Length: 127
Image 1 (spheres, one colour):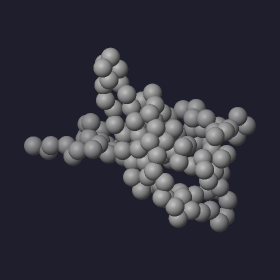
Image 2 (image 1 turned 90 degrees about the vertical axis):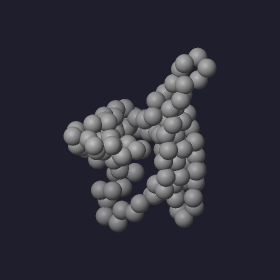
Image 3 (image 1 turned 90 degrees about the horizontal axis):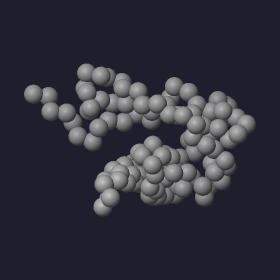
Image 4 (image 1 turned 180 degrees about the vertical axis):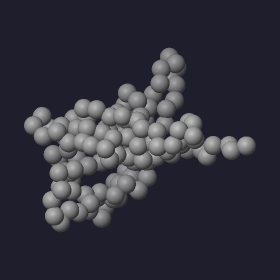
């Protein structure tokens, strides 16, 4: 998908409508992470939920699940690296972050400085 951006005539393959990530503790005090996302793919709204080993894994699995019906090649891609980058450290834990990702299909390596940008779920109290 990233490769398509470099080709003239690039079109968006999907639009993210909503994303929710929840982390809760189960009865064994283990963290359970679930991501729910809603995408528009070819004018069709798709909502999926997936659980994973942490928020990035859960989001990755939910995105793959949503895209698989229209873009089966996504099953060959593997997340190889991600980094969480603080965009404004003065906001502490309420800071906006960017998450650049790297992925590969075994032959082609994709990635770079672009990524998802998000903020905390609650604004920081600025007293």
